[in-house]
Length: 371
Ligand code: ASP
Image (cartoon, rainbow, N blue to C red; front, side, top):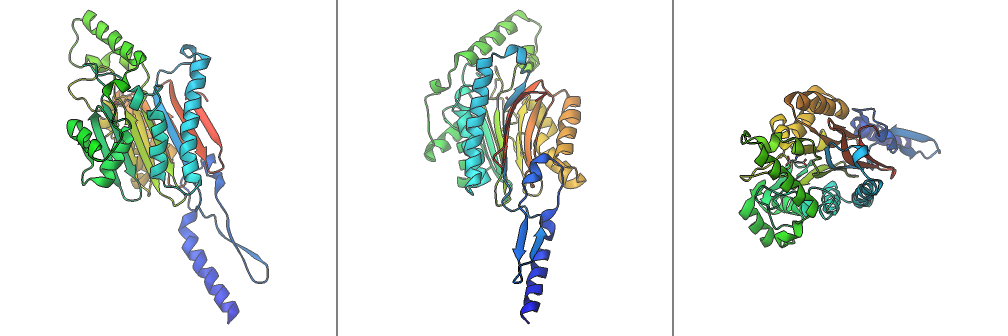
């Protein structure tokens, strides 16, 4: 009788773990699966499956673009790497301690938003009018709930506003004045717009405006066809994470593109373009020339290729960035994680600030293409 109960328990456990062992990629990051074993009364060991429970990972970007080693001083490179490491470790520790992927994404992005190094929060680029307008979004892969804000001017950490929109409003995206008001009502940290002034980004705006004056036959699209913009880096920040409960989340925060006007909004706050997360497939954050990322629905397209065509995260990301986006004429990249914790960074620019950490605590940091 006792023996029969053991057999029954083993059968039930075998069946309940059956579909958790599937793999969709052969990325080395998946080598940290936890083996699930039970010991029988007679001391024999039974391996139930390659259970995924407990696996977690996190990946971030700090923008993509023409980031070339020859233009980078060792000090600048060290500063970027140190900030990327500081940021990703915040998210890693949240995940390691059993926290949610949403918290990991938000808190990691906060570190980069507070740094002048990246085009987000404090370091946002300038609009044509000499202001700073922030866009951000966040998505919860377990519920497909999402929040976004666009064109805010006084919110210190726009990713916090995106999360508040998701959790405390019945809307997905708020913009401009209304979004600023909602942020105040939510008790989020509000700053004087001067907080976002950085000399470096103000100089970039002046340089572009100077060029506009000398190129008389420009049309309205000049802003986005200006080599200064096209070839400069896009410093948006983003994060994708998988937590121990198997929940994926992604978030993105940006100041947009230098010299933007007329309330231009890029891809970063657009769910499906700049950010997407679905527990069934992957979590993605984009950076690059926003107009193309919107046209290509880049983040969602990667998820869709996995869902409908059965592609791995790597295959789907390559298809969307190296083929589709490139053929459209767009530049930039993505970071992403699939439901098994495999991490991918894919870009068609010379470089992308990026970092990964897996459940073993292994850290990678990259800037240039070949790293
Ligand atoms: N994607 C952002 C935008 O177009 C720019 C960036 O990635 O830096 O607004």
